[in-house]
Image (tube, rainbow, N blue to C red; front, side):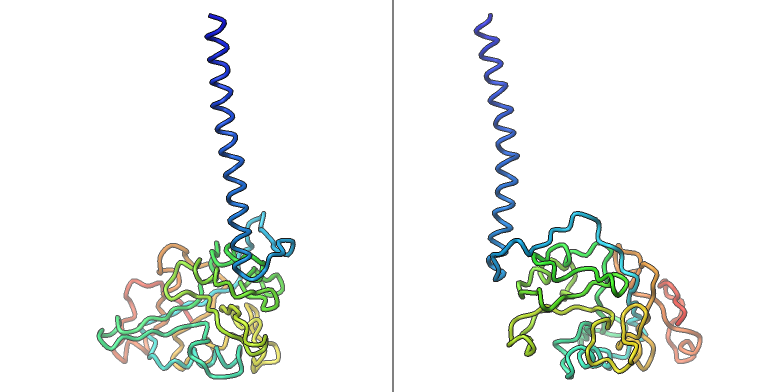
Length: 254
C-alpha cells in the first residue's frame, strides 16, 4: 500500500511539474517570439520597447462621416496630405474615399477614416511605443516618427480595410519606411492655422469638405459596427434636393 501511495505521489508531482513546465515554457516562447519580431523590425535593443501595463487612455476626439452626403470630390484626401506632408498625395492621405463605378448611389462610395479606437489594436501592436495615445493632444492616437521603425505591425493589426495606418518612405528620414495615421491634424507641420489641429483645433478634412460630409465630435461613438461613425449630417435643405434625411442613421447637427 505504501509503495502504491509513493507511486501515486510521484505521478502527481510529475503531472504538476509538467503543467508548471508548460506555463514557464509558454512564457519563454512568447518572449522569444517578441524578440524575433523586434529583430525583424530593425531593432534588437529591447530596452527601448515599452510594453503597456495599464489601459490606454480614451481619445477625446473622433471623426464622423455621412457617405450619403459625400460627393466624392476627394478634397478631404488632398487637404490631409497637404497639411501633413506638404504635398498633394492621395496615397498618403489619412482618410480614404473609395468609389465604385459598378454600384448605384449610395453604395457607390464609402469614406474610411481612422476611428481613434477606444481599444486601438494598432497601438497595442507597436513594438517600439512609436504609436501611442498622445497626452499633449487629448490622447489622440499618433505616430512618433523618431521611434517608428516601419515594421508594419500597426497595419497588420488594424481590423479595418483598408488599414487606417499606412507605411511609406519618408524623405525627412532618408526615405526610411515610416507609419502614418490620422492624428486629427495634431501634428500637421503644414497646418494653415496658427492654433493648429488636434481635438481642440481644426481638422483639415472637416474644414475643407464643401458639403459638410465630415464632422468632429468629442463624444465616444459606438464601437461595435459602423453605426457610431457613419452618421446622418443632412438637414432639411438636403431634403429639398431629394436626399433622404431620415434613414436610420443617428442625426448629428453640424
